[in-house]
Image 1 (cartoon, one colour):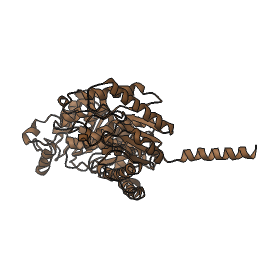
Image 2 (tube, rainbow, N blue to C red):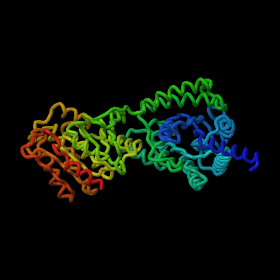
Image 3 (cartoon, rainbow, N blue to C red):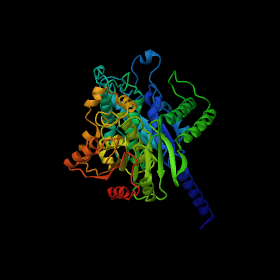
Image 4 (cartoon, rainbow, N blue to C red):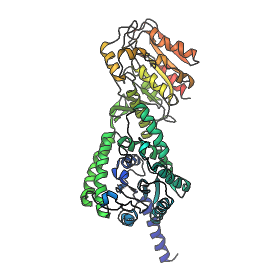
Length: 539
């Protein structure tokens, strides 16, 4: 082999290795909705949880009023300036920031909020094609995101039916979608999310001005983008985003970098705050990233010889105890109350490769607000820690309300229920509407958690004793351990009713009764029946 050929091969190898080791650079492009930053920050936070993008450079280059079409309505901004066009600055951006991935969300401004017009749509389509040509000429992966909804809350204000124009733009992108065109369509998901939120909260507003989503609207955008983005980028697991406190740090960082880079690369949009010099901005961004990583990193300690991780989900303290060797498919059990009390079954399952999890939803008595926090916790564990989608819930005492209610709400995510001296009807405890003593303090808290008057609570028909059908349909097995002389949670008002009704529905339930047993002690001295139950439901 000649000396020149050896040199060429060596250089080629070094270039190849350099490309492989090059840090990812992600650029977000878009109009004022992207400039607002929240959806882009949420996407960034999820990407940073993957090995590929953990240390990536990510910058939001969104610019208010911008189009890809180059169109602008007469008198835009009171005649102060025409709408800027991405093409004017795109090359400068990519020269200064050689992105490997570009995520672009355009369209809201491209039809200039007028009725459907083919010439305007053609200008949008030409702009999209030019964006793709320029980005891909640099070797970057371009991912299009369709525009969000126009006047989603007040359709009557959309006199020109501009939302149909955005639908037409989306249809164009979707028609192009193939291996060469990466397209994420958020519009159907947004319609479903808005409708669902309005059912829960009739006063909810997605976009007060008809264009710019509020914070929850941006979250809906990210919730639609992320599951579609993962297969496009071939990322492992499921996307996860941190709590709001951590998000605030990342948003602050993203805003500093955004204005610095907008100033460095230049644009023609008046009124955008000038950014700091890039070197200074990067130093501040690095300090915030250090804070962010510290905020999302769980605190580690030991619990009975096993590693315990403490963290926050939905603003609530949460924990996960890890086995020394994880069993196949990463199964787990979920303590809904009283973590660490009578832990013999937990410890035996940890030894068999099961995780043990807990989130603090105390004093919420299975109310909807607790269910939402539990939903967030489940999503967090399955995404960030790759735990099994299905789990076994452990409901001790009042924890029975949480376990039964969440399982009925999520039967496909519930492998089984182990309940121990469980409260199955809050009218029995803490309400004291039967033979038990109840708890006046807890009853007041319970009414507050549900937002009920006492009369409304008495008429409530979704206590566990009333809401077993979803579990029976899903064939969810139940194991109960009780003292048959329980003086706090009367057996006839709670598990006896559940057992009778569940069997009548065709459900599988086994009740282990401790003769003469009181409310305490919980569990069994020998936890083997509980362990066997959990092992069997995962087989």
